Image (cartoon, rainbow, N blue to C red; front, side, top):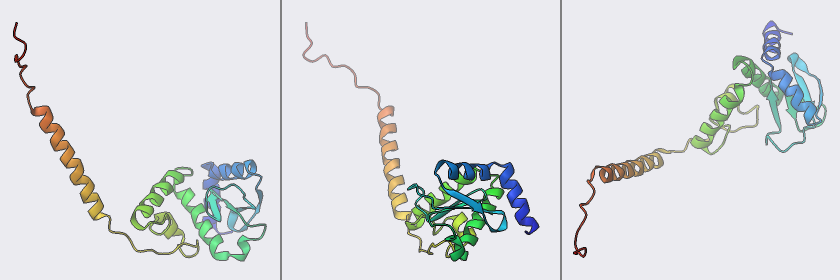
Amino acid sequence: MKTSLKIRAAANALNLSTATGLLLAALTGTRVARGPDGLFIGSSYTPRLPLAGAFTVGNVVLCRGGPGALEQHPGLLAHESGHASQYAWCLGLPFLPLYGACAAWSLWRTGDPGSRNFFERNAGLERGGYRELPTVDRGPAVRNFLQRLSFFRQHRTAAADTPPAAPTTEGNHP
C-alpha cells in the first residue's frame, strides 16, 4: 500500500472517523470486510438514509449492494476512496457539516446536492454517479428578498421615529 494511503488510514483512525464508520456498520447490521487501499467495505447497508447507493465515513465505505458490489464499480470505489481522503484532510467528523454546507450550496445553485458540491467534484462527479448541471440565476430572488427586507426595515424605523399622538380630550369633557 502506498505511503499516502497508510497516512490516510492512520489519520482517520486517530480522528475517530473510521471508528465511527465501523460503529455505524455494527449498529445497522452491515457486514464489513477489508477492502483495497486500507479501506473497509460494508455491504448490504439497509437504512433509508443517506439516500446514496454508497457513502463513506472515515475509511469505511458502506454500500447497499451485496458483497463484491463495489468491485464491479471501480469508479465508484475510487470516488468513495476520495471521500476517505477528505475525512483525513478535514480532521475527521468536521467533514460532515462541511459536506452538508457544500451540498446545500449545490442544491441552491443547481437544484442538485452534488453538482456544485466541492467534495463531490473533488472526488470525481461522474465516478460518483453525479451529473454536471448548470447553475440557476438566483440573483432576482435575492434582490427581491433584500428589497422586501429593506422595505419592512424602513417602515419599522419610520414608525419608531414617529412621536406618539397626543391624547385627545374630545368627548372627555367633565
